[in-house]
Length: 343
Ligand SMILES: [Zn+2]
Image (cartoon, rainbow, N blue to C red):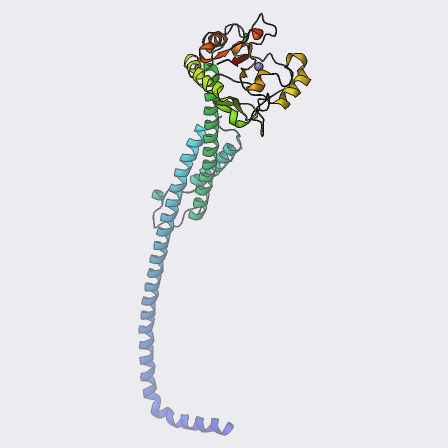
């Protein structure tokens, strides 16, 4: 190794004199080359900087545009939310959904205040403070979801109120007898016994009292009792009652109210047990034949001196429906609600 180093040094020494001039030229050339490389590098650096600036500027412009769009969307959502909040005041069943909307609207308002509008941001400015486009978009989605929840609750409230008002209107349209109670539409039943209901046809009934099969009966086209049972009568009695009801409705604006029609043997037995002698002996009730009906025991609707009873007593006979003499006010067992079909 040492011998090789000496040899190289000797060769180099010989070459010094010969190569001096060449070496100086070389250095000059090298300096010149280096200078021009620096210029080129500098130029390249400037280009790169300019390019970077352009990219940054474009990026800022794109960012500002995205944020401006997100801000506009949030603003639109807030306006919609504010409108819904104002329109639903006191008109939702549960105020919690409105509280949620008010809270998110408050946060959205702060975000809008701290984020400049797109027109106020120029591309040469650095990104201003405020919420990011993504944050604004998230907030807008939150506002819209809360707004939708309030809108749904409000729609439900409006529908419920409309239904309630329709019911009330239907109630007040019903005629009330004069003197039917100081409360105007107070009409309390005179019946205070245990509840009994009308009967469906008797399955396998043999046609005897309280045991009428469906083939002998027909239900009225209107009305069901509180248990959902339709009002069954002997077919011809129902058909006559249908015609009577058309005339009744033309006069009073609503169907004839029914309480009990056909009553089966078991129900009559239970009634006799509960009410004693005012209920017929099982097997003898006219209701067991399918030829009797009771209107509700409501004195102000169907009581002795009501227009409804007066109409039924006057017009019923032309349809075959009458009050038997025992049921009249001076009869043996006064029942203003009881009518029978006599054909
Ligand atoms: Zn009756």
